[in-house]
Image (cartoon, rainbow, N blue to C red; front, side, top):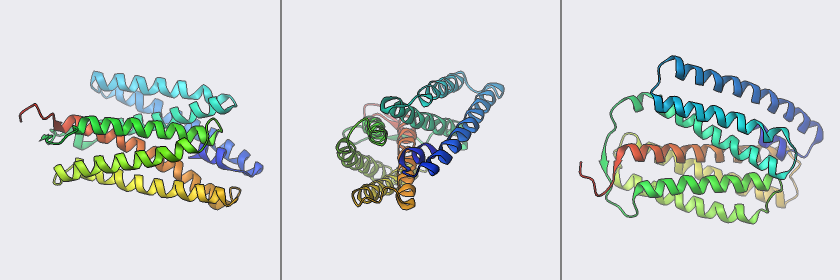
Length: 245
């Protein structure tokens, strides 16, 4: 969010202050992620989870590199990797949650296309859309790919959410997660349209535009993290159609 504030601010003094805050937040984030990795190792987490922790730690190091450079490509890469890092942390939160420690509530997939495919495709499309948004903020791409991508992603997520809630309306994990994903996607799309209209009205230098732009980026990261978590949970709880319970 602080990084989005830096790229969205049009006031030089405010931008400098936000950059200082962004640097401080990055240091705190790095320490917390290192602490999380140490915790995973010391508590005897399963080998696959420790390997996932190693990957998250490596992603943190890689993301720090482009952040030291100026330019559209470096800025876009830094912002995109930050969203991936956020999703990785959200996945670890899911893997260490009480619900994950319990046996999965297995259900049968009877729709077409399969929910495994739809949820994975949704997460991939959100990642592409987040990349377009980061590229637009850093002047690497125009606004048109991001606008068109928003329509495709919103429609795709609503389809996935409808499939999950229709097939598994009483599932204790899948339904709430799918509803949350649809709600946050709707909020994110609304904030994106509001930010675009404010930009068109030449009010990009106002605090209102800054707040809406930062909120739009934040909900975009949440949308991606939720789409990844839903795809993971579907692979855990939903049996393919060819497999019998």
